Image (tube, rainbow, N blue to C red; front, side):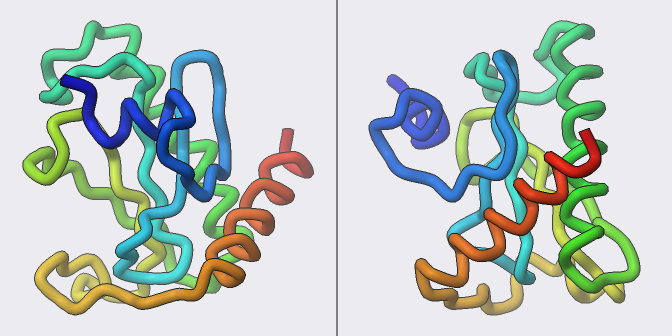
Length: 134
């Protein structure tokens, strides 16, 4: 059965995409901890990150690095925190979260509620940063 992320990849479910290659996709988390909270996934549906083949695992991290730098260039923060929890959706994904303190990446805290226009603006800013870096 296809995961929600596979449905985003196929276009069945809309997403605020910020970057995409043939193998990977980055999009805004619709239940963000902080503005700019982005999910990075391989397009290959694999539940557990450490079951990915070595090339895909390395590529996921390199793609995440590119996206993280773009996020940090448009969202004021000390750094981009990363988390791989892997229990919410059975499809490997990396959380990229703009942080200023450790508590900024506490997944038990309430999530932000953003309007669609704000999601669009954040995604567009990150996409623009990626274009100017690339």
